[in-house]
Structures are given as structure tokens and as C-alpha cells.
Image 1 (cartoon, helix red, strand yellow):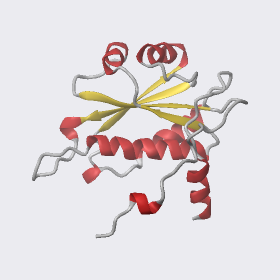
Image 2 (cartoon, one colour):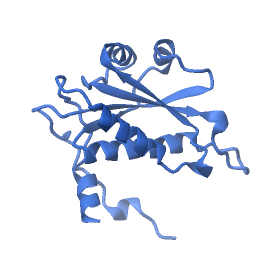
Image 3 (cartoon, rainbow, N blue to C red):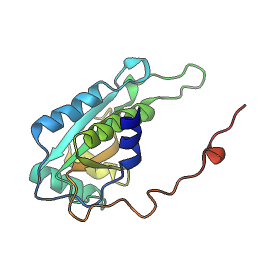
Length: 172
């Protein structure tokens, strides 16, 4: 448990990637496998990942968001809403929760491989739809910037600011 707690304590959202280092294909394969193994509601796996790398990936990502951070690799996580489990009482869809689980698996797997990551939700989905051949039923939810940290890498100023458990947790 110590190793896991160290990993989650030290992980931070990277915004200063080393532009000169590509993510090795073996490491990318491990990230995608971690995503595949993520538990989703009823194990429906109502998600798709689009790998945005190289020059075309850079152009696509830069067109869709200011939060590019010069990462050599971006993963676009998308929901397939009509395949997601829905709660029978009110129709609530687990698609976005499932994407959150998949994204968490990827960022923790990245950290375990000495890569850094940043979860990006500030993007224009319409631009991504124009740039990436997404089927109509696939909805962009999250971009993950992934790569090696630069020499200037450091946690953001609010990284260590956390509310107490007393403020966050209620017993009933």
C-alpha cells in the first residue's frame, strides 16, 4: 500500500512536457492495456480511445485546445452512450463515470512508467469531430496529454492544497 500511496501523493498534472522525447510504443501499449482492464459498469466498455501522436496529432490537439502543453502524445477518450449501462429508475448513464475510471487507470499507469500526464476537459468537441473520424455515436469526453516531464517540470501551485477529510466525508 505504501507504493500506491506514494504514487498518488506524487502524481501531479504535468503542463511542461519534454518535446524532444517521444513515448515509446511499448509504454503506449501498457497504457492502452491498463485502459482495457479498467472496470466499467456491467463491463460494457462503452468507450473508445483515439491515439493522437506525431505531427497530425499535434495539429489536431492544438486546433481543439489551448491546453496542449507540448505533449508528444494525446489520447482522446470517447463515450459510446448507447452502449453504456443506464440505471432503470431514472435513466442515468454511467458513460462519463466509465471514462473517468479508464482515464484514471491510464494516468496511474503512466506515472508507474515514469511518464507524466494531464487530464484535459477544456477542448472544443466540434473541432475534434472535424479533425478525427469519429462515428456519430462516439462522444469526445476527455483528452489525456502524456509524455516525459521537462527539466522545468513541477507541480502546480495548488497541487498540495487539499481539504480535510472532515470537510469532505459525512457519516450517516
